[in-house]
Image 1 (tube, helix red, strand yellow):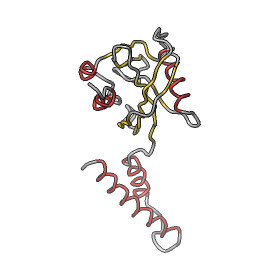
Image 2 (cartoon, rainbow, N blue to C red; image 1 turned 90 degrees about the horizontal axis):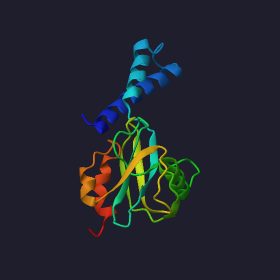
Image 3 (spheres, rainbow, N blue to C red; image 1 turned 90 degrees about the vertical axis):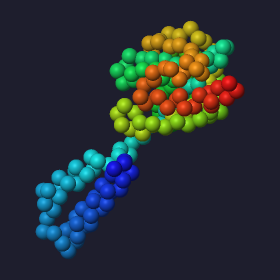
Image 4 (cartoon, rainbow, N blue to C red; image 1 turned 45 degrees about the horizontal axis):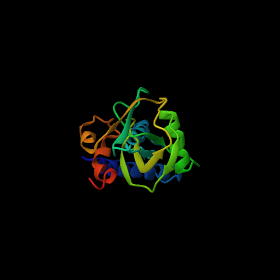
Length: 183
């Protein structure tokens, strides 16, 4: 059974329990919900996919040799390589989010942000849905003072396909033709 089928089955069972609860409250049904039904609701709720999702903003940074910047951190949450960027906070502009993330991760200063290149989705290591917005970015400096990232390197289109990315970042490889449209 796939996630959609499991979700529909769970939602159907929850709807049945909700009707039983409503009938009870209206005095038209059960004397009381059984402990079994109460536990059933709690277990069913655990089966529903999380409604939480995260939007992150990613910086597509190419150097003068047309290589993509990727980095690695030691936070324990991300295992493997990733494109710089991170969570887009409420009330923050895309530019201010990228400025903050690049400063936190690399100590880098943002020069400019282009129009959105692509959107990619996946699940975080916590199971949340993540939507990532990828923007071309120019930096003022490449003399990195690492923070959240402890290592970085530039990779070619071919090298990108060989990199072991963090599980939640892995789909970036599917967008190589958007990063390098002319190669």
